[in-house]
Amino acid sequence: MELQKLGEKTYVLLSPVNVGIYLLDEENVCLIDSGSSKDYGKEISKVLEENNWHLKCIINTHSHADHIGGNAYLQNKYNCQIYAEKTESYFINSPILEPALMYGAKPIKELCTSFLMAKPSVCEDIKNFTEEGLEIINLEGHSFGLIGVATSDNVLFVGDAYTSSKILEKYKIQYTYDVANFLKTLEFLKETNYAYYVPSHGEVESDIGDTLRKNAEAITSIEEEIYEIILDKHNYNEILKELFNHYHIKETVEQYHIVGTTIKSMIAKLMEEDKISLSVKDANLWLERK
Ligand SMILES: [Zn+2]
Image (cartoon, rainbow, N blue to C red; front, side):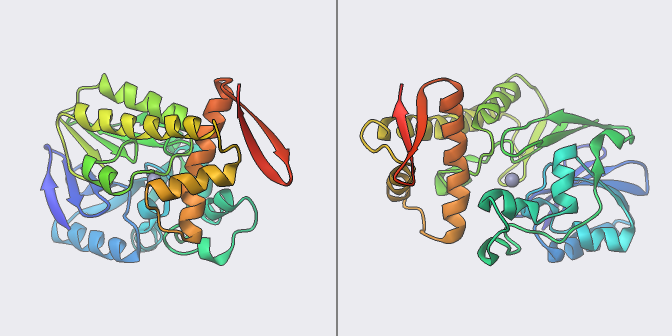
């Protein structure tokens, strides 16, 4: 982890999951996300101690396990408040909801690993957050209620509202809960003008125009591809099979569910746009172009 100063009061701990640090005053800090594990919690704690900072609160951009993994350790050690958007806060208080959402029932153990399910921590609605110097920005789409955090140094922490170009090249199909709002958020970000943008995965940038364009292209090209596949392969499993083959996705139980969520979100978008219809026949989900 490397501590980088981005403004008078704003720092980022650069790591596979970037963690923001904002100085509320000379002693107290607010974290933006807490990394993917207890080890992150320990590393963050070490940095706080080295700088004589006290952890007063954590804002979680959203409830995915790689953003809240350090919560339980840090809350236990510092007794800090934790905040997230209301729906996300339910998932942080009861992390079983994440694999349950993905599985659609009591989840199988393959989905209850630390990759998808963090330890619970006590989290409240971001509406109760009253500290000065931080502004909460709605960036929903990737998850239910993803929020960005803008600091008084004109730095915006965006969570997973977009992914860096490098990561996008590696993982073509990104997890997306709501494709339509994901695209709206990219459009919204295009019109903003922060000094620095900090995604949770990838590098800090000042000009994100190109990265936003690549994120939008990646998701719309998959959506177009699904619409194409529907022309002659009409059932859900066939669509999934085509995409797994095309993008060389590892055939694991986890990936089946993660990629499946994004595909289902795209199907919902196509339905909302009245482009396709759905039916069930021979115990299969069939998709038809309108
Ligand atoms: Zn996420």
